[in-house]
Amino acid sequence: MSRLKNYLTSKPENEQHSAAIAYLAALDHIEKTSPSVSASIIQELRDERSHLKLIASENFSSLAVQLAMGNLLTDKYAEGYPRHRFYAGCDNVDAVEEAAAQELIQLFGCDHAYVQPHSGADANLVALWAILLHKIQNPEIEKLGKKTLDELTPEEYESVRQLLVNQKMMGMSLNSGGHLTHGYRHNISSKMLRSVAYDVDPKTELLDYAALAKQVQLEKPTILMAGYSAHPRRLNFAKMREIADSVGAVLLVDMAHFAGLVAGQVFQGEFNPIPYAHVVTSTTHKTLRGPRGGFVLCQQEYSEAINKGCPVVLGGPLPHVMAAKAVAFKEANRPEFKTYARQIVDNAQFLADCFLQEGVRLVTGGTENHLMILDLSKFGLTGRQAETALREAYVTVNRNAIPNDIQGPWYTSGIRLGTPALTTLGMGKEEMKEIASIIFSVLSNTKAGVVQKTGQPSKASIITDSAIMDQARSRVKNLLSRFPLYPEIEI
Ligand code: PLP
Image 1 (cartoon, rainbow, N blue to C red):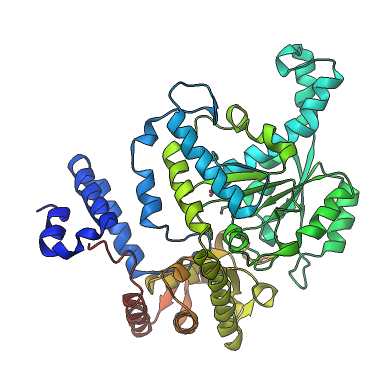
Image 2: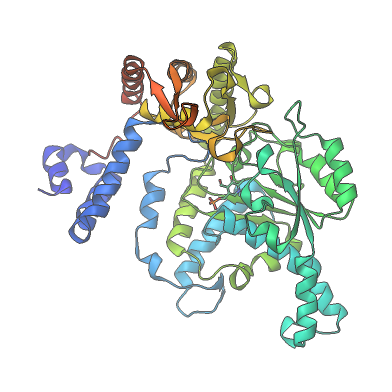
């Protein structure tokens, strides 16, 4: 019997669960074409239900968000932007894209929102290039006495291109918790621009604004980027703007990680980037709890350049994902999202305090946001080993370098933990206490393995205590049984 028929016959009273019905019908239908894809979706649901998700960059989106992506909007090409498309028949995509943008404008109080970027990395590319075109290319075209790029001779075009790739950007180093797209050598951002990184203070691991101001004076970047993937503190955007203004730089804030905390008004005043940054980028799937994707917000001055995401960086948008973004942003505009955002941070701070009480060192000594970085030196493990041991105990985390990490970015000396997903499940302080205790027990009872050939301690393999592991898994199971994921989907 199909999953849906089985559900309806065994639980006729559940017929009002339209999301579950839609989900089960979709799985039945997918299975007819690709049993393996349907099986992977089901297995992912089972895995997510049986493991504690502490990945700081992930969340659980609502079924409304997920279902908004599974439809014919995926078939539509809509290059351009609302009411200005390069294809016919885009009225419904216009409505979807405008709805998503309007929800964002209401949510963040910004001048302009662009919801086409397929991811956070795309959003950063769109933003960087929009800034370059607005600040460098367009004035240069004017200087040459021309109106558009198409009027330039090949020589003039080459001189403009050289000018563009010689601009400088500054972003927080990967080592300090910055993101690859903020000027990392192996990323395109450092190849299309001259990139200079700034670090956190080596002692406090906090951003030293006075030191940054000095470095900015010396480097005079065109773009100053702020934001992070692995830094557990708020940033003061009023100070960042002052520093950017001191050299006429554009302030670009990447709030991918903490967008939900801005939306939920946990980050207010000088910690809210919207009033201070010229341009703000974000992902949609982390604390904001939407589908995977990105967006750009900007002050009016940059709106025309940002709308040119296509053709500058992007091809056609993903209308089905824009529909899911519109749904997610509507959810974030509800009053209860503020309670959710506050709880994310309360949970993170409580979880951090539990580790501190056990004598575990945390990068910067604590957290002000949704994440924390545990320094594993107390346990004599690399991040890779801790990540593996915890996954065996049904706890999902990711390894993360700590500032000036002697183990490098592959093995690392730290793990990053985040509370957005478990907070979505409804967990609170009591559960954080139990989770800290499970993690501490697993890490304290895991040892580094040895490299067979050399007999030296391994950075990857582990020796675990099976009784401790069994106990940890049963504690996780017990915890998750009280906070089921998508309980209406009976699989
Ligand atoms: N910016 C920051 C600060 C991030 O943390 C991330 C992803 O982790 C991104 C950008 C890239 O987002 P995506 O993976 O959607 O491209």
